[in-house]
Image 1: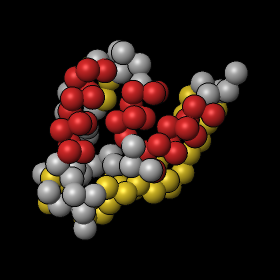
Image 2: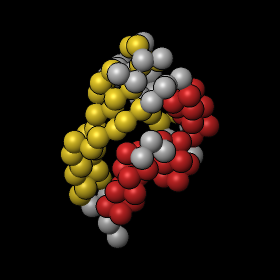
Image 3: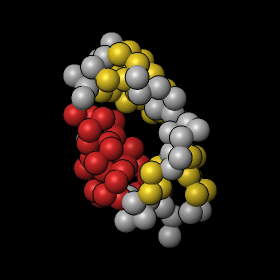
Image 4: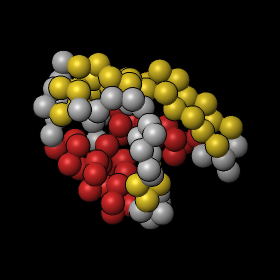
Length: 101
């Protein structure tokens, strides 16, 4: 079975600004997330707490899908994120209160 419906469901929630709901729905208990060259954050609870703190610090966030590739059980997603008035790559810069951090 293709994972494409789940990937598209995840993307839909993120684009609606429902990142925490997306995490709850689609992320595994042993999820590992890494920001650039930082050490990975491992485990759902740790990652959820980190993302909850981040998204709670924003005045607004907007995501735009750039591309998605789904092949069997693997996928890659490229997005752009707009935080307050700052446009940042979801893979590079975080912004807190509209400023890069």
